[in-house]
Image (cartoon, rainbow, N blue to C red):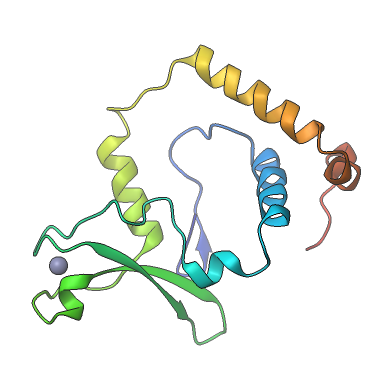
Length: 142
Ligand SMILES: [Zn+2]
């Protein structure tokens, strides 16, 4: 996760390796129209979170930083309505809070995790076009 331009390693053991994640991400990107994700501000927590101060829903907002980078924030619809003072919160901070909240409560059986890893591996390796580009684990510059 990236916060304030600095990359942080998650505290929890990742479900899949970084390299695999990148490969899957590229497959997903190639399947969706370019720019679609930016325009719709999709986030896996979108629509699931509500403000603790005013109970309105939190929505995702994109901002462009001074150095041109893109930043995504959650902010409260109540703030839009003028009834809440919850500040804009970077998505990474929200993600971290959700992980902290659910982290120990949600534990996935290791058999299931292995099953998912195997399935993802098979899916990635079956994607010949992409496999050719990433053969040998060599990363190409974006
Ligand atoms: Zn609020």
